[in-house]
Image 1 (cartoon, rainbow, N blue to C red):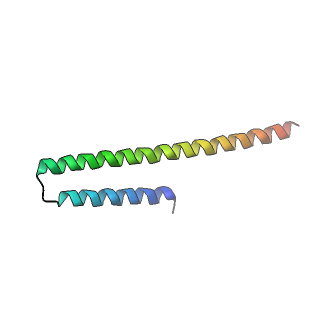
Image 2 (image 1 turned 90 degrees about the vertical axis):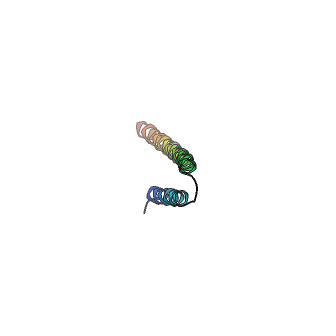
Image 3 (image 1 turned 120 degrees about the horizontal axis):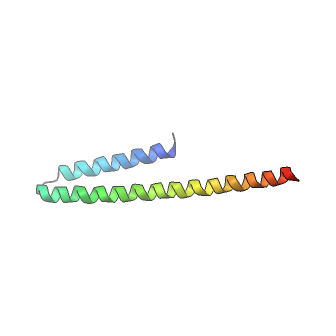
Length: 78
């Protein structure tokens, strides 16, 4: 199983747990909606951060592949 699927499953489980915890808490509706909105923002920020890390990692790997390809090209020219 890929790490992306595992991460997505963990985030979905955490979001569902937080949502059910808030929905079943004995508070006013306005307070509950505020908490849901705050948690949603937190999860969106977390997912954005993970996505940016993934993009950075892929960029670094692509740079490495490009460098290896350039080295191989230079060796073939000799």
